[in-house]
Image (cartoon, rainbow, N blue to C red):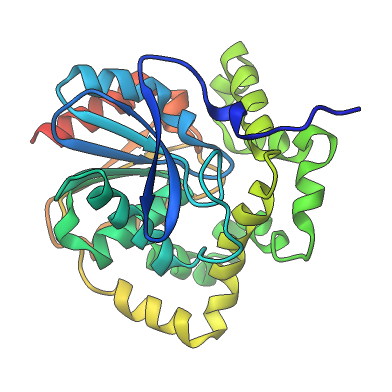
Length: 306
């Protein structure tokens, strides 16, 4: 009989503190280290807060309050059946900054967490002091890439289209979430794929994804992204995302990212009115915070201190 996976799978001990914070009507699991200006980390699919464990201690040691959160529907955070639209997810990040007792934060997001970070900086500009985005095109740039690059970005986004299939979450969690391992191996850079560190990370992501309701919630975010295209809420989201971002923005992207192609992400600076930097990381895939952890940590600290 298979062992059931519960929230304890993500309650990993380390030089940090686990606690729960209520924000935007939802209870979030946050992992915190250090004191000082807030740096809030948002993970991507199919990860959890531990995506940032390599950054937490280093950022805290540099004089910041480093906080990584399990997004709505992931890890030990609440898993409501609704609320996976762009507005609510951005409201989650904004609400967390306030619930943590801060007026502003450096916001760092990777993958889907990067999409949430873009939206938060657009919808709640006063709360985002500086923005760091990894492996995520601006939502409007991604939308344009899907339409204009069918053999490139649209082909790379086929998993997102498959996620629209009803009950797809059961296929993803079958055989100890073997499909999640397959996605990870497809999206990472070749130099990290065959390491023991990757094997360990894959096992942890697969276990966390098997926490009850996580798979359903994770797919709901992608389902909203596709279905909203034909809905009024989606039209309003696109219109509002056209507002320029006034937070200084650093965008890091792996040259070997096969989920969000570098050429798709490259044009995102068009929507940033403030200082903007783009850096392409040679040989790195979709998870630079794990594949090139020290380099990414250094870039985050450089941007946070400016």
